[in-house]
Image (cartoon, rainbow, N blue to C red; front, side, top):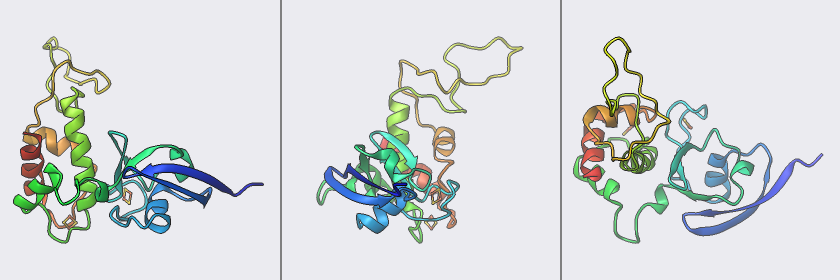
Length: 186
Ligand code: FES
Ligand code: FES
């Protein structure tokens, strides 16, 4: 039985190829094989968000994905957000708003924020997005998060808190993170 797989993908725009044990997660591929240690291993169980990276425009918990599942994909890690010496707007607002303390969760927060802004701009609702058309009063509001609005969703504080709720910060930098994400979105 084959226990290893040859794969190739794009990491931060650069081609990467290697042979990995089939059980290797994307997080371990990044950290142990590609030398990209920005994404952090917090829980290794999909619960903290410290390992968040971008698969195209979508955010994923890299500890939950097998590397073989992303063969051929374009993956962006925190190391790929800046444009040379120019910080990504989300990185800049995190610095300006003092949105971190120890910094362990920050790479995941940054990648998650980039995708959250993209999702809201594309009109994807969250669980707290008000309905476009009012529901009848007898129907409790349950937004259909699969339905895309033709208009961007404004990133209010409640929207940012909901959309970033998969990224935990044990230092409790949440108020400043919300401010930083909202300013970057603007
Ligand atoms: Fe992946 Fe915690 S390390 S969610
Ligand atoms: Fe320390 Fe978030 S800044 S865990």
